Length: 326
Image (cartoon, rainbow, N blue to C red):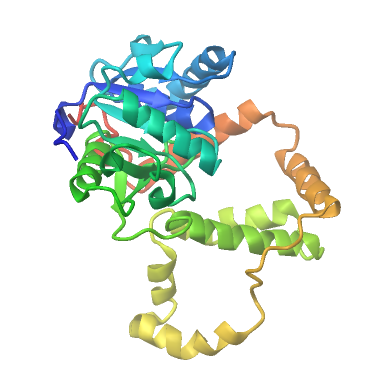
């Protein structure tokens, strides 16, 4: 890999390719951190949707604290991929989850972006090893997996592929930290990465309970928001379980509860997503929404995340305060 032309702390120009929910969330995040952002998406109405998304996110970002110089006016939506990355110092790709599409797009980005510029994919499950196969210089391609919405949730998981240069992975991790993210730099590729693997296990079990009539959508959501989710906001499941062992910690917990691992509590094989289950999940979400629109739910979620970050003392951590971390 050619050495990056710009240090992570010196980046000023970011390109966002793909401007849907995740790509648009990245755009909002980078704008709030004071970067100049060029965005491209092939959809004919992409610019209107993107600017609406940024406008909707801006109140939450303002409450969290904008970096010096942060402005929605620093967004430019361009007509071609090549124009988006022509002078970029970092590229964030957020195309739909289609392996062939990802391969083609990353190859085009690699051909168009300046030499040495790191290109990161927001993929939620594909290993970079599988996506970088047709790129001319795969050494600069990394995964930068965010969580929705990227402008609020701090975590990003960074991992390279078999052909990725270790320096590119390290550069990307440092850049995300400078840009206000909380970073996990993975030592190896894992299908679905870390957090999605855990989310998927919970999701599958929830679908089983709905399919079997054991719980409703609202009961499942309440069981997390009124139960373990309150602890998970500041302490992960491993340390939470360690505390279940009292003074003996995790060792006592495993000795005491280890046999229950053989109990039929979980069914990690995914249930058949037939029409009945599909309709039950959709209808259950309508009931749980209780008349609130998607826009209202987004605003409620955003404020909830801010409240949790503030309550746990993390609102200004990782560059989320008003000072520009760069």
